[in-house]
Every structure is written in C-alpha cells, then in structure tokens.
Image 1 (cartoon, one colour):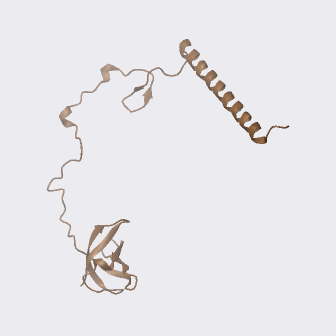
Image 2: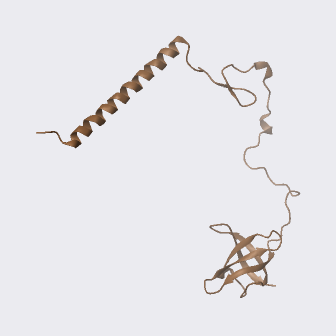
Image 3: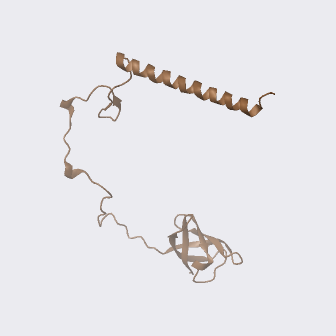
Length: 151
C-alpha cells in the first residue's frame, strides 16, 4: 500500500527544518571562529562628538565639561512675555449646515480653516452663509466648533 500524500509532505517539511538548523549552526560556528582569529567585526562601538559610531575610542583631550544645572528635563516654563493673549472666541462663516443630519462646517475668517460643527454645539439656529462667532474644542477627528452664536 502506498503512503499518503500528507505523510510525504510532513517528512519533506521536517527535512527542510533540519537542513535550516544545520546551516544556522554552521554560520554560528564560522562567526565564533572569525572572532577568535580577530577578523570579526567591531568589538566595541564608540560614539564620536558628531553622534557617529566608530571603532576607535574618543580622545580624552577633546572631552567637554557640561554643567549639570544647565540641562533641562521636561518642558521649559513659559514666561509671561511668551504668552499671547488669544481671544478664545473666533469669527467665521457657515459654509454648510444640514439641520436634518445635525452637522455642518464653519470657515474661520482668520485662518480660512474649516471646522466641524454639531447641532449640540449651537446656541442659535444657523443656516448657510451666516456670520457666526464660535469657540474651538478638540474632538475625535480634529478641532470642533462649539458655542456657536449668530453675529
């Protein structure tokens, strides 16, 4: 009686695995032999002043002293002069609004960016081409217009 095809495939697969293991073992032994001869790759890697990896150690005469107090960890504090007084209320024009679907878009008059507007963020009823004032809040997909009022 003949062997089934599946058994033949299993045997072939096992032979391939064994062959790969032997090749890997030979490569490993070759690397070990090279490292003993001194022909191997870089034994130690050093970083020079430019951030590049080299096989030569850095020159101790070129060492630069760094004051520990000058290193800032984290975000630097904002100075009062750095803060700009930005008005949270923005002005814009309604480019599209569908009352049946409950959403629309408002174009900011300063930056010309489109912002999503949901019906839940409205104070007054709006229509297309209305001038409005609004505030921005971060939403799931970007900035959303909220507290929208007619001007």
